[in-house]
Image (cartoon, rainbow, N blue to C red; front, side, top):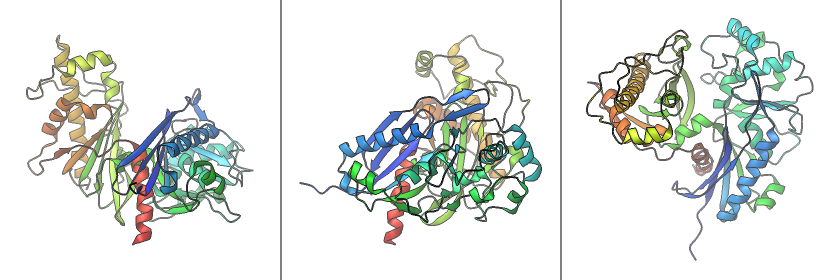
Length: 445
């Protein structure tokens, strides 16, 4: 009988479901499980979900995972969640309210207050930020009986931990950004004192991958995991997805080709340029402080789906001629308005002229999105980030080899011949599993 390797579990809470992945120290996947989540409840700008749904999905994932692997070999668990999803709890960490989801945008007046009193480069700007949500909750009397404020990943990790009478509330660098945390100087900044909310609610901030506790005894017995299984501080889903790709060196970049276009490159120093929609997130690589510098365009796959069905996209892809540029100069947007690399709420889509041949039109759209990607990386380089030496791709468009060829052509510069690399993995849960693994590696060094 062969020895079962030590295992590390990553849990990802996304918009539509919960995924758990178990990997070993060589990054091999031993099992993965997905459980669907019901859609959040919407009422105008209010978007809410009951945290009990997350916990039920997490437990179902871990129960199923424990049947697929030897649970006695699990050493650590880390959780990622949607950025700026926020809830309040009592001292026993029981939710006092439904969670305000990442895209809840009710806190308009609170966002205006933050814009007046906070520096423009803080990630806490906007009605959907965690800080704007916390202000809204405070101004509506929801914080009076609260003991803790938590992000989605924080709360789930706390539920997994063995609780003690002196246990503190933790969050990680990445989740804390939209709550106003200064990740560069590692503190809650003084300008937060100008905002009216209970400052006692602000959690302690630790680096992703920091061990924050041990698995709850009852849960250890339930799932068959060792009682000394470590619970590790996680991160946001987008950061976990980046980590999953295998990008780890300065100058390595990841482009997410989903409904929107998101680009991020690893840099030595952070860049904050709100006027361009550019932000930075801390990233620890082998004990070294690095930064993910990037932005998100409104362009992307959502534009393609305005014109073509899945069947048409599949059919047209086989007819693409990436070596023959169409010459169409499109700026594909789903509607008026762009945030990055052009920050212009009045920018109109440029989608004319439309050729009679759908294949040419489709290729022109792909070329236009590729041009936006190239403009985005050039802007980041102009602001001080490294131009990508390599780009890994995630999202639905990553599998389109013709589009990859088009993108590679447009990303080349005289100074840098950017390589297009295959992502090691594309699931955020894999990135969280890597965080769990890194926590044990840090104990050994």
